[in-house]
Image (cartoon, rainbow, N blue to C red; front, side, top):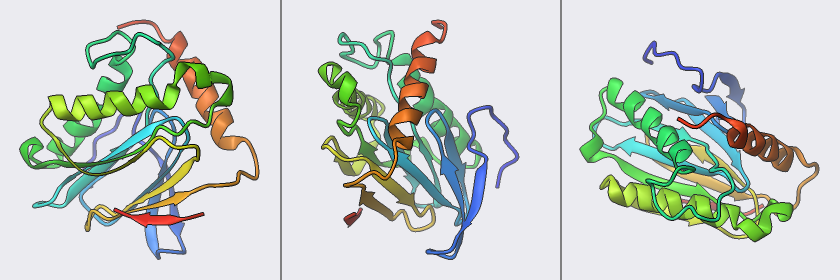
Length: 201
């Protein structure tokens, strides 16, 4: 594991008893990259995550981000899209520092669920999903799997060594933690100064 420190690098580590692996949980605005078998986990509502991997060197990483509400987000060069661009660049750069080749990177993308009811008119999830697909196309990073949009939050398990991703759709929420966390994150990002089922992928 590289000794690279960044304020957005996820640090919430734990041992996952279900998979018998050391794991790290990514919160909104964070990312993680590694060259070992650390399980990378996150829960997505309207946010999106990109699982990137160099399949030759088996270096991988995942981010978790949300664009500010903006009906005018149309491309990766828009003002609000800078948050998504930053989230992608820090992940890619960290992986490159670990030895990965950007030319070999493959992506699996998830999230963009329509779960923030009060923001439904702004198509928050759709904006995030559209951004990430356009960004990856622009950067010539091949998308090998995706599970975007829909009505449900998702819990994502990414296994870096194999590239496998398990997705559990959370059809019922026992509390509002996911929505509260993303709403708080959205407010933080917007105020920043400018500069159930398991599917295998």
